[in-house]
Image (cartoon, rainbow, N blue to C red; front, side, top):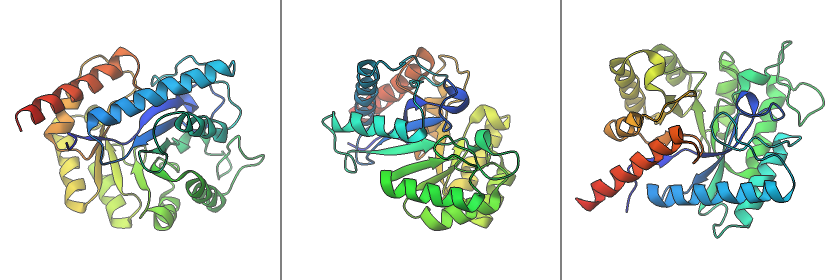
Length: 279
């Protein structure tokens, strides 16, 4: 059974401005393989989410949730969080690199160094733009990322282009802060070849007609579309119907926790059941 939409990543651990402040990267995701139905993908995400909770609890780590519903543990580095995810997959019935992969939303604006470059807790000194790109390339080699969202700051267009040239054929490089669901920024990104997907938020650009225009531009150019929730959501699930209606390639709805996230996941489950029951 095919899926109504695929998940770009199910948020498991929150850092940056969405966490407790001790991790630089904003979201650490698990990404189910594309051959899974939405129902299967969500089941996998929930299983890993609960496994991470058990690991954090066993280690006497904080396992309260962050702004997006993912855990906000008291870890020391971003690599610590990735290792927790790796451990959770090893403890699950799923195979890393076959059933499930990693994804990251770096939200790099938040750790852009005031004097240039990027400052993360994994390194003792700020990294220049080129050194940070090398760091991301090595990170991808080690953890085989499928999704890399906002890996660089929103005005660092040259670095976006350099990174996409290096890993864009194997990793979905996603523009969120870079593009802001804005047609002009999207057109520039297409022209300069700086990303391969856009995170599209219907209440970010201002109207549904503008949102539809952005989706059309992306699809025409072969840019993948990811219809996304936003921080500060309500339990309204309309965005799930919207994602199916525009035939979005992916959705991003946060962690499988808290009503405002679960409502959207539940609505997609319902849509998938109804579509394939009559298909």
